[in-house]
Image (cartoon, rainbow, N blue to C red; front, side, top):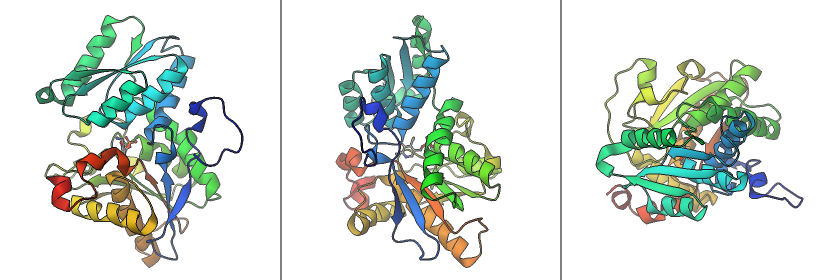
Length: 326
Ligand code: PMP
């Protein structure tokens, strides 16, 4: 995090206020800007919801001081919640299917959290069920549940969106963001549509993911390598509101792979697959605005680069396409 000029008392104060940087490969007349979320202390956009959800839940008394949060998560959300929990005096427990990245589990443990593994073959559904069972056994425990908790989208409505708004002096024509829970896009969409109902909003997902089912389409589900975005069961994506979205675009793993390498080699961005998918989709929207095909109130497109490629080096993301997907 680079914008603070004064000493800070806690790492929590370094969450947010991330840099907004132009993607140089976009069209000249319609700049694309990306919010670099790996500048957060847990190195992803999920630090924002970790801090925001826990602080609000403590304030509202939903989580008692010194209580426990139990979240079924294998990824950045666990790290984000663990960073916040450690500083707010809350115990964090994560229920993680065994197959998920060992690196991320090590980081959660290093931050003081407990990680409980569930059998891979029982899937994420069982991890969710186990988290709720464990919470029921304790009288001070809650499950934040990022997929259904409105505080997730609210964190972006209250922090990510206003930061972008201020940096661009309100001139935001389109918001383009990959959807995992949909929290990032929904929070930003709601904020910018309130400011200008014509703001063009685009959700991004990997090819093979099913967000387009929200638009009433039949989708052929397939596996994909792009991480952190996409869904195979839209009923779990309770935060996603299709009325706030103009389009859902699908990006192929092959294009994501090439864009990750290009972003590093040409623009110095060590970012992971969801950022590359967002970059491709945001440039496409910018070209659409440039050509007049897409209507937007301003000639500016905003997206997010959610995390860093360093978290996935062991998965060969800078190797050949076959090494990454193999
Ligand atoms: N990119 C990465 C790397 C993520 O971990 C996530 C969260 N799953 C997202 C994008 C999507 O964010 P959201 O859950 O807010 O839709």
